[in-house]
Each structure stands twice: as structure tokens, then as C-alpha cells.
Image 1: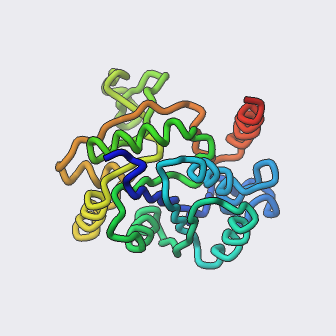
Image 2: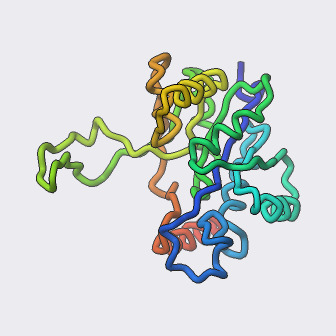
Image 3: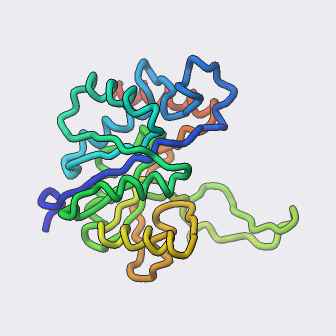
Length: 242
């Protein structure tokens, strides 16, 4: 079955506080939250949403937000006049809880679920399509890049080993999974009181499927600190020049 014949839902957890953006002036981000920083007149979250709205394989987008920010975000979405369903759920205290809250709202006919960081607005549509297609085939797929720096294993500030880079990737998003698989992964994590660093880590511990990796890009940055905004402005300018 092709991905266009499957229901693909995207979850965007956007309830984080963005504490590393604390040095910015208060008027540049709603409540100090990095996903609400303005980039060329629109919040970063809106730039991210645009990429998934443009993706043919995606049917709906669910954004998990703090309750007091939902109406504000809804107004932005109405202004954008998206051609796809974008709806909101209340986020939790952690990313994991926010994703779980969104999962609970998906309809049973959902085939695949993609999870993407709200503050990665430079993912390209072709990569979204590739990782969705890979997950449709294998059950689980993520976007990742090979590190360019040498990676050291350390203990108490002393090097213990050099880890071969050809065996490493830096995980990015989107991360895409069969709906039944990610639901089970979150249920098991809750039962075991396990907190993962990403969605793939929850699926990996089920040991039911291998998680495939689709090559990403070093442009797919996660905007987490003030210096990232300089790159973001550059990347946006380059995108618009293409």
C-alpha cells in the first residue's frame, strides 16, 4: 500500500519552556518559549507546520501546547489558511507526556505516526516523504546524520575510548512509526516508568522491529539557543532564494 493510501498523522510536541533562550528579550518569545520566537514575522512553529502541510503523504497535524497558548496558536493557523487539518491538544510536563496526549486523540484508522520537533523548521519535504515511506515498509524509521567530529567516550573528564563515527548517527526528526507500534511503546514506557530521550528509544526497547535511518541534513537544525537564530535567518533566506 502506498503512503498516499495510508492515514499519516504528525505530532508536534511544542510545550517546552525553551530555557536556553532565556537571554532573549521577553517580547521576542511568548512566555519565553522558543517555538514562539518570530522568524521573519512568523513563529518558528508556523514555519515548521508549513513543511508538513506541503507534504502530500500527511493527512493531519496535531500540536501539543500548553493550555494557555492554544488559542494564540489557533489564531496563527487560521491566518495561514492551511489546506490540511491542524488541531491542538494540551501538552504535558514533558515531551513524552505531550506526545502521549496527542497519541490518545488519533483515530483508529491511523496507519503511521510521525513525531517532529516544533523548532526544526528546515526539514525539507523530500526527506519527510522518504522517512514516511521507509516507516511504511519497515514499521519504524528516523532521520539522522553522521557526526563530523570525532566522538570520545569519557569518564570523570578522562577519555576512555574513541568511538568509530561510521557506527554512529545524530538522531533528528521526524521519527515515524506504525501507529500500533508507537502506542505500545508508550504504554510499556508508562508501565515501566521509563523516560526516553526520543520516540525511537521507546520503540527500540520493545525489540519488535529494527529502526531504520534515513539520511538527514545538517540544515535540519533544532533551534534551542540564541546563536541558532542567526543560522535560521540565513537558511530561511536561502530557502526563499531557491
